[in-house]
Amino acid sequence: MIYVVATLTIKPDSLAALREAAMPCIEATREEPGCIFYDMNASVSNSQRVVFVEQWKSREDLEGHFRAPHMKVWREKSAPLIESRKVEIIHPERIETL
Image (cartoon, rainbow, N blue to C red):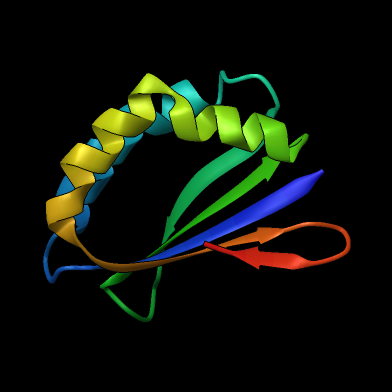
């Protein structure tokens, strides 16, 4: 089992647009093989920070997620709204950063 913590810094006043772009992807991702948990959280102390927290059965399931058609749509719609991102994949024995 692995966890993913993806921290995004978004452009000012773009949270509503980001949520709108994310919801179809979130709903589709929750139906993917190997997805145990997938959620988006907006920071209460920083209006430009959004954190996705995910739990997957395996790294292979996560790789399938990266290739999913709804991820391509999400990347295209969210790109203009994101200033930076950090993705950490937490394995039992190590942390991988993308």
